[in-house]
Image (tube, rainbow, N blue to C red):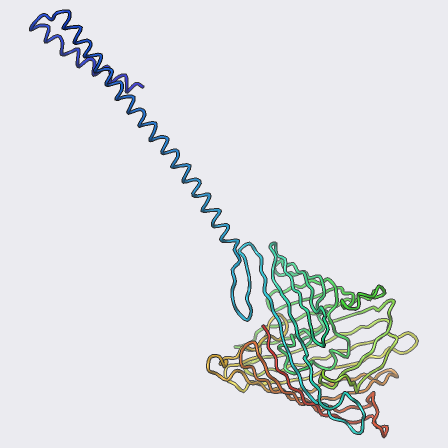
Length: 464
């Protein structure tokens, strides 16, 4: 407003200043002066209009600037919202199976495996047993999913459809707190190296004899894992397998723990040393049976078997050692189980194995991680013009189920396996085993319980 007043004053002064000169030259009449005043008022009015127009333009510019600022703020908010929306959109990546992830922590990954077996078990001499001879089966058909939930939570669910049945193998909720991880649900009870190694990565079609004979299985419980550098420790409290928990009287419990030291020594040498300890109380359901098939799951015949025992408690412990160096690996395990049977001496049963293996193909080695054997990834897979990985393995597997007056039999297994891994997620294997039995649970027609059988098996498998 001050600028407007100054402008009007200056204009008026300039006009007035011009009038005295005219007055000196001639005396204007009153009418002339009035005319000049009228003209002056007109000019002032014109100037006022111009000033008002300028002020209007100034206000319009200010309004446009404010609108532009509001538009910019709205655009920035829209951009932020769009960015957040993009971040929330799941990202799908493709490996062996599609994996869906979001930036806010959700993760979903399906997985599965299919194993088809065929094999034959020889007749040790005159037995009329339908479990002998050739048989085949779909050993495993598993579908599941694992992933993460925002906040550090993890999950895993897996179902097995083998034997035309539905079995829940894993049902896990976990929480990852860095070096420490907590798990609740149905999962393994830290029994030993081979039992914890996935069936996709074992060097024989079936695990060592003691793993099934001693009743190793998944159970519902809560556990904690600590892993730091080369050291790993697992411990937990478990009830029973999820299938058994449908019975209200299934109130057994166990304490299980395992420790592993797995340093790398030298160049490319992986060492594994471990041990486990287990105690199980059967409570209101005493009773157990220790037995095993002849190295092939396709038969239900068990040549080694203690029969039913009135066991109230089980205490077992195991030791394990392994080494991987380039194409070579060696592993040994031993496990002792003592059964508490009221009214009689407590028997201690033992099982163990020694194994060595070698890759015939250049650049291939057995995988290892998290205290167990892992996937073999061929250096020259067939989808890249190579022949995949070819591995040969030899094993001695021993199981003794006779002690303290109980005669369940003794087994000595000598096995060979040949494994071809054409790509990361497919394997084909052939096994041969010669098994010698002493004091077998099944007698021959002539009464002999010391004999041997030969077993040949083959497997085709894929996983994703």
